[in-house]
Image (cartoon, rainbow, N blue to C red):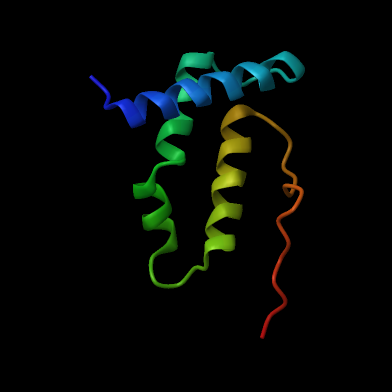
Length: 87
């Protein structure tokens, strides 16, 4: 049985996927999409993608791309996420 925190994350993801599915055709059944998004948005996935090379914004961009691809949504940058200028 999921811990309370994990259950809240799953419940929140169900709400988000449900809302997205009212405006877009989601590529898979909602319960399956929720399970996949739960894995994609986990700390373990974030940590694995970050490694020692990527900054937080880069990891967020990758995760957003994966989430949009899994849901079958067109690729686009999220509002409010800006690319940093190279130093």
